[in-house]
Length: 455
Image (cartoon, rainbow, N blue to C red):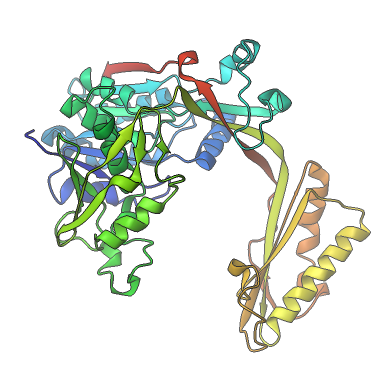
């Protein structure tokens, strides 16, 4: 493969472009295709799905993507690394294996499964050992909500991915792992970086951080000079050209839309950074203040000089738990006096809910079109504002109260202020609130499992 490997990322979240992975495979050479599907909210959604169907709980989009790119990946030796396994990596791997067999690839593919991140079955044992799994933000012990916990997943790093590659896996499916680990794992494998090679591990981590959100680093969602970004409709997804010494370049396939600049890469570096001197992952701590960015060529930014430090002795754990119920609905009010009508409708609704004796843990009203995104900083809307969307949301542990709220919103269309142009979202749906509990666990208390299977 030479001294440089090409790692392309074709998904920034579950719901990203279905065409991006195909574009990366078909429109130029790459060595690895990574696909990042998971976020905290995604894990909660997948857990709900698995609760309804034990075969569910993974990113089904990934299976459809593999149907389209599998033959080309096998033919060209492109390895695929995805965290599409969610809370059910084995079922995801089974579905991908079925696709491989259906495409006539039986006997030609090895699928690696990285699991062990699901510690839900071990929670009580861990608590009995004195591992309190305290909330990182509040300090509360997990025992306070133990009876409401729905899922608990450890963020593993890049090492298990590298080990699966060492065992010959061509497609690697993980459960919860760090977003950066998807790109760092192949670098560890290809360049044989040691577990204490902190500067190179930090470089691979930052490379993974830059491309983890897909086209967000190639001009998508970019504030800098956004009007001049060429061909949004055909935006290219990012590719890292990585070198053994930790230096790398960020680029995209020639002929695709978007733009890669120092300013755009800098924007992406700021995403979820936290302390720039101490970006903590399971593999290392990366120091963002040490990196150097250079516009090496059009649509190519070179990154060098990165320093790293030893990782901590803990893994982060994402816990989800039941936290009551919620519902939200919306009405659109039209000119004239759209904002005043929406405000009056909100006041009427709240008065009716109060008269019914309904109490909520939270109730929030947003006036979209009248400064909702700026919490009123936009000033008083003009009477000529053409339309305002009133969105009201409520949350409570009392499901019956939420159900009654749902039935009080729609009547405003006829018995409230005029010019409602439709119940924007239909009758609101009552949904369970799944809350997030961030915590830490000693690395010694949990181990990843790696299983490489021939299809």
